[in-house]
Image (cartoon, rainbow, N blue to C red; front, top):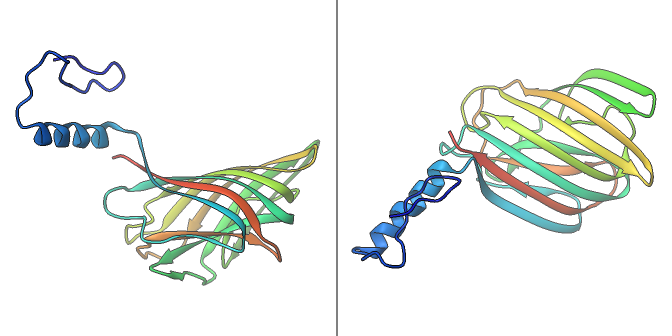
Length: 196
């Protein structure tokens, strides 16, 4: 039987006799799940919303996760995030963010502890793209994050890089993203599990 070039998964050729086809398909599916680096858990496409909730997405299937965000705001804003348990956001002052941002020749850095995470130490914008990597949100331990963002209003662009920590040793199964300030957001957010 041949194998796929990228992942080395064995599959039947058109001339092979296949016995127990459903079992064979199940084996292939399990193999793909085990070998895929990122597993898409959910993509949400939204328009003019005040929050995007990913509920019951973190589990023991994965230790770490990636969120890819691409959105526009109704005004020049930042994007904030909170961990959640079920349908409830963790809103205590347990979110620590350390970051640095640059805009043209201006650079700004800082650390804050507040009731949410953010990754924008310089130049809010109406366009926003960001990658979050979350470490161990489902485990009963602190959750750490590395995030990088691009923000823009027209031709003015800014870059921000942050590391974050949630100080509680609590298991969380979801995350909420929302615009920081009075306004709404439109765009797409995809959440992936990283295979162990």
